[in-house]
Image 1 (tube, helix red, strand yellow):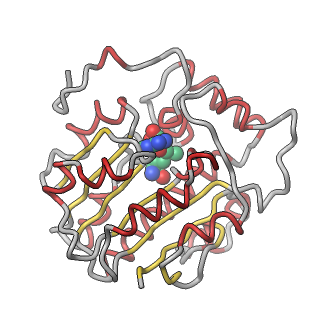
Image 2: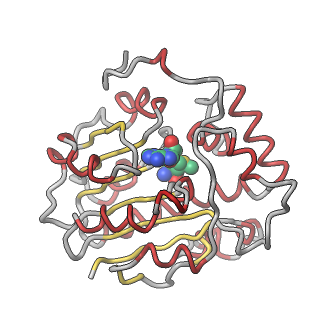
Length: 270
Ligand SMILES: C[S@@+](CC[C@H](N)C(=O)[O-])C[C@H]1O[C@@H](n2cnc3c(N)ncnc32)[C@H](O)[C@@H]1O
């Protein structure tokens, strides 16, 4: 059992899990053979998957530093992923030591690592929860205990909404979460897309690999990602290729970062 009370034996190693595949893309070790095989298959079809994962993570760091710099002191990070240093609370606390972070993920493997790597310094909590049940996340005692919903919150939905199918109503989920937040809160979001590289071939489709995984992949064009920011004013430079959102000097002109297949944006609730 972990500190969260989750029995490690329940971890499913028979099917690829997006959290563990993403860990593999980022060079982590918390993945199994089934995940490595699936991730390698995706990389073979979409070689930019690796640079995209790294650029997505770098976007998360820049966006967190930005919103904490704007005064936000509480963060809800849904679709946390397997801890990858620096984690959201570590990045945030480089800017302000008193930032509180509530982590939420529906993958048990994230829960097993949360005690040691996400919530060990206090001022943070982890909830094993599913974004497809947003009310349950908002009502959860650990969220209610940590987050003051009368003060601005940064809601992080980074590389998670493309695991929600159209039938599961991604816009409705974001709206429900957003309604709970006061004005001046921020939405930090990235989303997989084929916009920058043309249509993915039908018989060599990374989405097929994710069909065997525990969550399916739905990459979306700009016109379907932009409405997720309904009720928010997009900060400059808007919803753009994630690597182009307020890039560091090092990435600004890098050829590699033109290959990134994620949109990224930050909105302020109005
Ligand atoms: C690609 S990782 C992103 C990790 C981190 N947010 C980042 O961008 O570096 C996606 C995460 O979303 C989680 N996830 C997928 N579907 C989810 C759902 N329905 N509810 C909560 N988390 C989900 C996966 O378990 C995985 O940890």
